[in-house]
Image (cartoon, rainbow, N blue to C red):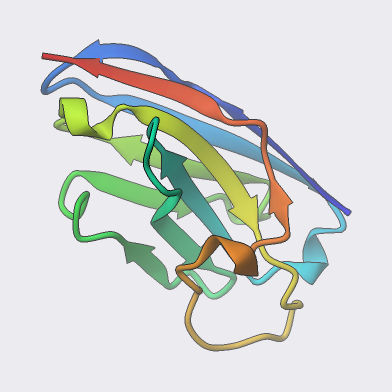
Length: 128
């Protein structure tokens, strides 16, 4: 079992910045990719960013150049630095982890159904 707890959400104006954190605990050796997803009201959940155990990072085109995903060396925490925020970034942001195993290789999947563990979410509101 892997436990994920997000923090750092809040409200900012357009152009502002926020940093989301996700505490990762439990049997983390079973995970390969950690990811950030977001879901706005009436929209599907989308992967914003992901990072593999080897450090390879992935960022959605909609946030490229503005958002940066990172993890600490012990993989106890996942971060999402969000700069130049716009109202379209308003959503509930979720931390997620897969269970592909320590020795897995390859890409981090985009679809949410590949991720087994989820945090409770952190709300981000961006006003114009």
